[in-house]
Amino acid sequence: MKNSINITKCDNQLVIVAVSVETQIFYEVANVGSGPAVDFTINLKEGTYVRPVPYTNSTSTSPQPSTTSIGLPAGKYIIYYSGFNAYGPYNFEFTLNGETFKLLNGQAAAKYGYVWNHGGPEPSIIEVVIGG
Image (cartoon, rainbow, N blue to C red; front, top):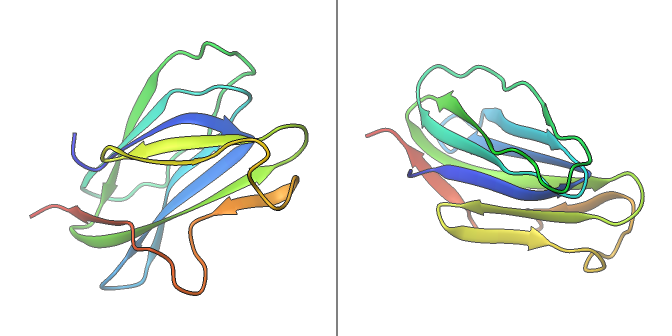
């Protein structure tokens, strides 16, 4: 499905937002807390926005797949993400429309707290179009 996010690693917390290019309104599309493994898919589609319920996986290394859909007003969006680590190793990985984004343990400058994000002084643009 177009505009599909599949989160496969999330240790400890991953937040993904879509920001409307036209209105600059932020829409939280994922707030995922996990242990070593997760298999969570979010399908972005045109519709009425309802803030998603945070998704938490147990510490299972063999999670059951879970899927949800998030409605957004039609338009162009920039996707931003942030990863947080509370303790121990961290691992983040997700795909968006077939492109992989990941930070594996030991690759971040910081070990704890805010360890991963998409942003910076001149970020690359991760853009999606919802609807028409």
